[in-house]
Length: 196
Image 1: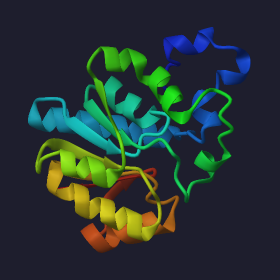
Image 2: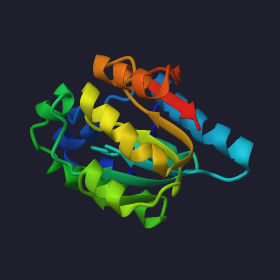
Image 3: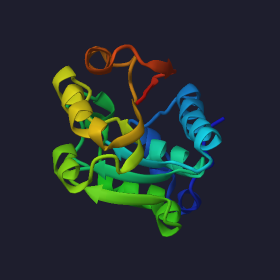
């Protein structure tokens, strides 16, 4: 089961309606379920919904999934694309800039205070946030080995309970970096996580 479409989507001209997939954002149902389960398991275990920081948000789909499941999500991205992801490279700008699309996709949840935004690089954001500030750190930015390893090193100290991410099975660099930095994680679909 996929997410319901944001309200604004029905008001767009037909070519702009597929804003997620047009930006390379086909999040498989197994990954949606894994994200919802990650939030639900945290809530069931800790008795509160988690604070999540997502490193790499692009069009906002995974942030929307986690926020709709109850999490409060801080999205970190520079919205300039990912050099290792064909979906980002293929986006033609027809629905607006990537940042404009993200803002439209997340508008309702931002108004509710469920999604917050930090526009900048992973390294810039890491300097801004304190250690152990978030219950869950979710990494889905660059997908090469060095970048993923660097993101894990930058963000693991800022996680209180879980470090997680996306594309474990889709990009060899992600799997290698996660395994090297954290050991083999639990995974469901392309979503990986390690309890700290």
